[in-house]
Amino acid sequence: MLLDFKKQATGNIKAFLDEIDPIPTHPNDDNGDLYYGYISKGLLHLEDLLSGIKTPPNAKILDIGAGYCEMLLYIGHVLKSSNMHGIEVNQKYFTDTAPLLVKHRVPVTLYLCDYRKHDISSYDVIYSFSIAKKLPEKEEMYRYVLDNMKPGAIWIEALAPGLIDVIKKHKRSFDIFYSELETIALRAK
Ligand SMILES: C[S@@+](CC[C@H](N)C(=O)[O-])C[C@H]1O[C@@H](n2cnc3c(N)ncnc32)[C@H](O)[C@@H]1O
Image (cartoon, rainbow, N blue to C red):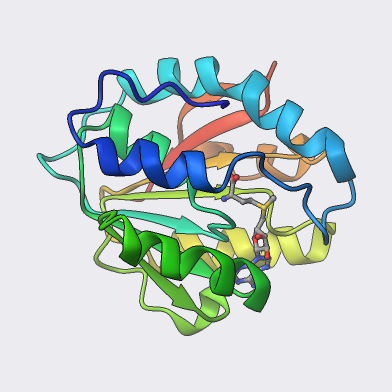
């Protein structure tokens, strides 16, 4: 497993993760099987990033493009929150994941839709991993999320390498900016 949930009191999350292990490669991801290697490299860094961020108790967390929800669970674990929500546009991920969440009573609500169809204004923490791959889409996503998220909320984005130049344009809103692993956190004004 990529994630270590030994400290997690709720064994159901571990059972969920065991059931989706071994994690298949991402069918629609350009990076193919490099994808999860990239994620695991980013994990320690993400924990570091998250520990520097102040969030309310049981913060309401949203993963935009939740996939199999393992990063969402990881973030919920680090932030000690069970108020977790995921949006996923790919029917396959949704169909694979939703029954397991119910079976193991994992506290994640998963929505099958495009992120632009979901009200993102009530979340304290938003996470996304490189869902917009082309530059115009990326710019559109930045505008959309920053304009619609709750004031004071945090958006954490893990970026595919090479997209860093796009987000530099939005530097005014940066709280924390880790260029090495291209994971950033933005706070809404
Ligand atoms: C790189 S994966 C990230 C998966 C997971 N969040 C993680 O960090 O491991 C990006 C996900 O975003 C989803 N996605 C892409 N465009 C989307 C959209 N417009 N609305 C919702 N989800 C989308 C894809 O189907 C894919 O599962």
